[in-house]
Image 1 (cartoon, rainbow, N blue to C red):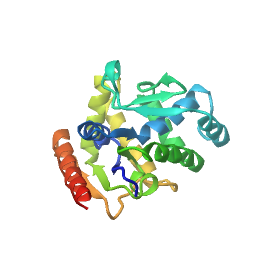
Image 2: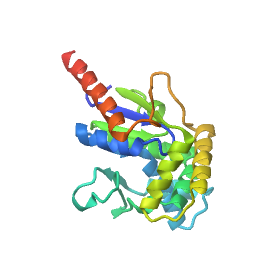
Image 3: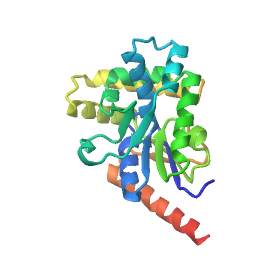
Image 4: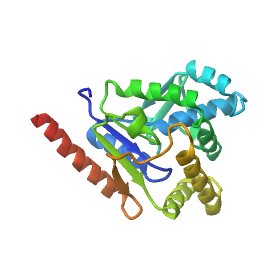
Length: 235
């Protein structure tokens, strides 16, 4: 364990991980790292380079030579995004948020070599910073020694409704039924993949966000972090 405080958050899609993590990072002045965005980057690169999702060698080679940066939004970047994602000096923060890219991310996320490359990039970012990192395998794969491990979840219907409203606010014309089907499918893929599946580790704090507001969830976590940091300082 280094001298930096690491918060690792796992959970299914639309459980509130992104929004909660971003606000916590702001409150605590930590760096917010959305690891799911990295898999979306991999999917975007696959699509933009006209590759097939099962072309593992080409995708791995492409990722190895691609530079991925993540920063907390500043200035004009505060346009509703949770994080700023820069790939090869280009801002792709919104380009990676389409449903097509999301579905692609689920596919490339099953490729073990892709995950190895991205996990290494994620760990390198966290080495010298206080971070809030969220994704699907953070608590046991990326930051297994994190100070605080959290599993955010929620009922399927509630999460699908959140996702649908989010997409509608962006002007995306998609039915609730399609969003629900996509969400359930994504959950199944994430939990059943053979490489780094979504799971709850024994020492994770499980928070069901179904009946909680974002503010309530954030307050719970920030309070716990403050208590933990005070205890660490006392020692």
